[in-house]
Length: 193
Image 1: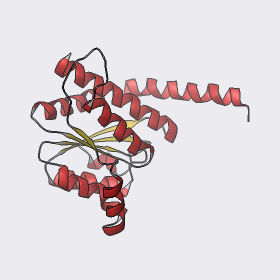
Image 2: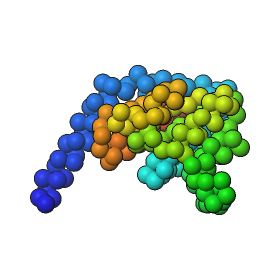
Image 3: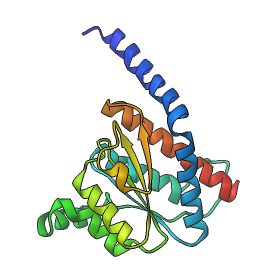
């Protein structure tokens, strides 16, 4: 392996993916920002779910909203809960009701009408994320999908799919966190800037 060439190609692919996001996802990013802003203004909250790296993204995004993203904006905490961080809940759910149901159970217990669920899946086909979206819809919640590739099954299930234009998991995950930071910054500026 030519490591220098690999580094160059990886960074070039990442840059090209982000340029495609501008063309293909900007309107959806704006719509997602507005959906979450409306929820917060109405006293509702954001729930987040995903697996693996997407689980880490859920925790990251929730932290940006509860604490803050920009140090120049002084604001109160915003209500965001990552359904991916409680090991007791996740392991009990996996053991007792099946891992495919853990996020749906979290949405059932913590979600309410008017809340928003951000469902993150690079493939769009994660069963536990699909079931969480179905539960959110039954509770009259709005749903946003951070997806990749062709969007998978979740593309048609969520109210607002944001599909990163790549089939490379690393590029999709990089796109997700970039889009999340943009959304968080728009939310902060709109509500408290």
